[in-house]
Image (cartoon, rainbow, N blue to C red; front, side, top):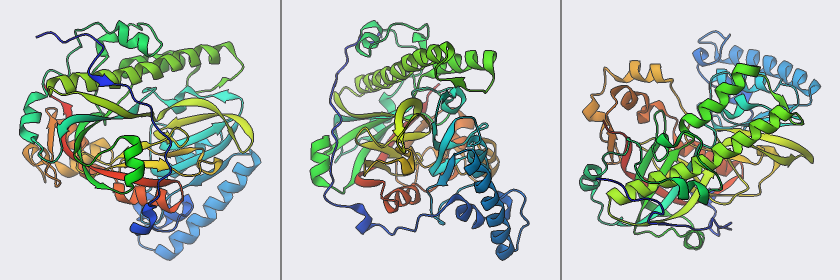
Length: 445
């Protein structure tokens, strides 16, 4: 059966800037914020390269000495490096090393690791970088515009029909067969040649998830945002699919991983393509939501849509910079959705006092604890695919890719509660509401 063309049943809604009256810090057991060296020094030796296992006291002293030496060198290049995380957080030494290495790039003024910091390909994920005079496509990555949208549906959250809803979610991985031109035009762009992927979730850590309210922390703030206790919400995490990959590949073929002078014509060309991909990604999340709502025979209103992979201009410590975010949500655009793993809660938060200290950025999720290959190796002998199709919170997982099922298992991710506590204790957010998973959609063959 063909799908109806855009416009969908989704209604547009502005994201409001809120001032929560019930600080969640009073309700959470928060740990002190510390620097990256302190985080990593408290880890087991196999997660801090170059240190010997089993001698905690000497490990701490050795690592602190190395860190101070690096800080001194970095000051010579102006860049400041900081990691916002507690000793209870899981931060790998490799991620901090990548952060420090990236901070040595020309023009770099500030490198911030957020509580979901983890190693990436060359540069870390869960980080923000403020750069003077250069644009670095590699720091944005291949999934330009990736972000998270939250839609309130008309489904009843008090009487969830998990099995029924899971059964209805089919044929979402095929290309959308409606006309996408009006949708793209509504986002201010035209066709790019990648419309066959528009409206599809993609692989990796992308997902679409039906959620219900676990608790309302700030009633007034939630009312302003449009969150009610009895509704079902659709959380969509996806990006620009093959479009962003094509843009980054084109850059690498000409320039490798090096940056572009922000005054150059090449930087201008990249930014035009980047801005197109960012809008395309937002349109993709909207169409994914439309397709799912249609399967579920309901309507919805989009409450929040925030990107966490992109570059923009902004002032950091009084200097006009290019702020690069790789797995980092902005703290300047109102409410943000921070999901955990597919078996954990999702947090609706409001940024507090955005500042240069965090590069005007927040964590975008829990962050990986294990690599994909490690996840498979650790879990395949312990859990069957049937085990992983249900979570401890009672939610259903639709993932008919066996490797992906293990790679994206809840155990492969950090504890989202610790990530949120670190943000709260750092004075960066207030928690507005906590959502629990009902049905998580990854892929269905």
